[in-house]
Image 1 (cartoon, rainbow, N blue to C red):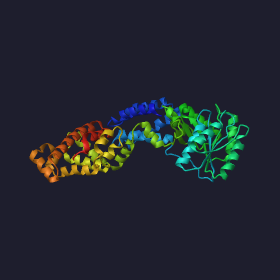
Image 2: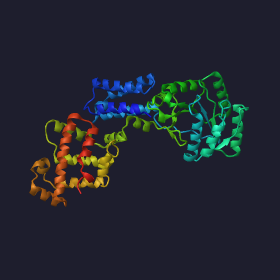
Image 3: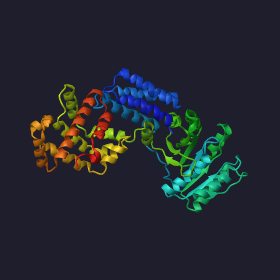
Image 4: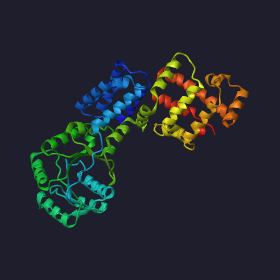
Length: 454
């Protein structure tokens, strides 16, 4: 799901992170790309317009323009607005009623209601430890009763038998009566679907809804229908109050328009995603995780937030100004950077949050980041003020003295000086082009196998 959108947005946001500062002019190009990416993903036009406008307003505000890294602040805004579009937080099932709690599944024919009913029963039994009964009140479709009976047996849920001569309301009442005697926690009602929304269907399900008073009324919709899924859900919700939506066939949908449109158009949360044909292919919908997945950014957003909390912005700005003025990046500056890294949890902690840093993680994960950075700092502490400010002055005899003073070897001093040169080059590039991702990648490339000094 979201493959196409992820590719487009990832490419667009990579361009943004290559810019040192954002202006209204270069943001226009970026926002145009974001708009096109969303439209191509079959997101509803009204949702696209609202999303782009909110991102634009925030991106041109102080939180970006005065940020240490405007490009990463922009990415964070896009992420937050994606989460807001999809529902802010994962909204679970509200089953806090006197048992049995009824979950009524509704939707059009072919959306996957019956399979979803079995998947939901399995999820409730395994994740929530509920005793579940599955009931079919579809008396129209061939095999509409036999199919859920077979699926119930497969997932281990109880099944309430019925036949096509009965009325849906009568089946539901009888099922609830038996559920009480068997101390069932949840009853899932699989209702009849239609090829389109019609008056007869809506009248029948309204009567059923009023009779059983469900704790949850979930609209099951095929995500591959894109924004039509959201429009269908809205039409249904206008007649019958929904509590949430289940998006099926998400694994076959490379666009993702439904997931980005449903909440805004219906006002109802997406509660579950059908992720495969298998009966365990149902997962709670987490907007924040989905946003990260859409952006293809691993956990870099957590890294950005951590940097905002822990990095000393004043020091970073002073260093950037110093380098822009042509002054060199010395060992005092390197020590400051090591201290900033320790504040961020060390190199391994930083790299594990960054996409594409698996190899760098392999190089440092065997060493304690905290211990390693302290050893590097102790080498710098063994130097004179002149040596720290003029690393090029450190000759053979000085290296020997520094090594002895820190309790390490001359090769450790050589390794530190090599790292300093690499860091100085990276910082020079960073001061010109900006971008937290460039800086973090530079830090990863700077570290030798094992994280540094041994």
